[in-house]
Amino acid sequence: MTSLDKRTLEIFKHIVDAFFETGEPIGSKTLSSKLGHQLSSATIRNIMAQLEMFGYLYSPHTSAGRLPTDQGLRFFINGLLEQGNISFEEKQTIERICDNQGTSIDLLLKEASSILAGLSSCASLVIAPKTDQRIKHIEFVQVTETETLVVLVTTDGQVENRILRTPMGLPPSVLIEASNYLNHKLNNLTLSESIQRIKKELIGHKDTLNNLAYDLIEKGIGSWSKVGESESLIVHGQSNLLNDIENIQDLDRIRHIFSLLDTKENLMSLLEASIDAEGVQIFIGSENKLFEMAGCSLVISPFENSKGNVIGALGVIGPTRINYGRIIPMVDYTAKVITRLLDNN
Image (cartoon, rainbow, N blue to C red; front, side, top):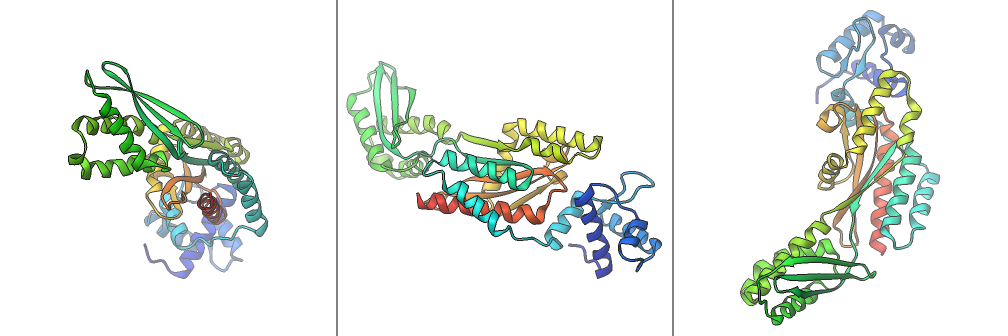
């Protein structure tokens, strides 16, 4: 991090604060007035030039004031941002709305996304496993000479069926062996937990299984992985982004964000990357190719299930001048509430 003296840091902070408040460039004369004319306009211009040289400021027009770059915002967030605390009332609202959803993970996450959008006045995102129910029973059933049906039943009564291509004349004993093996190993695990366990188990138990049973289980895992790896994306509050438009440039940025929210695959890859990290992650503008044109930021945090495994992430997306000091602790607190509620289920 570049070392700046106290006076330069103060000027920089005023510029960033003005950007958060209005989104407009601020000039040396305005800054001098804000500081009670303690510094002359010429002195402030020299400081601005130094900050521009470091890559923290830029001028949108030749004669305009200065705005922070994405690099400057990162510098500010990492070293100068004063995070606030969400209020007691906001904490109660988050807990009450989330806690009212009982044991349904889907409802819990939808409500968490909705409350985040409302409190942040931005758009909220939640990524979560599409299927995370516990497995009750698995069975292999031969339907033709070369096809076997995999039947997976979850504890809440959902049934998943997959057709596998299998060798002609597969003995019934192999189907029974594969079914018994999986039911013994996977009882009451979630689908994602089951896939992880069986992949590890097969490595150590290949010699103890009939080769045909081993191949059947391996094919079954491949068919379930497509279910276990499919995740849902919940988006709320897109209309909030229209509330803070000052000029045509703002409108163009919002259009890019809307387009971004429609490209589920790209967002999912970004959110999945955040799942591997600990705590709140912040993606700012051009730091990420996905946001380069949209001119937006994402504040996101992972959450865990009752086993302590990270299963999803939630966050807030909006223009780069979102209220980081307020939104970071809000996202962090909501993710912790979700983790606690999932741990109690």
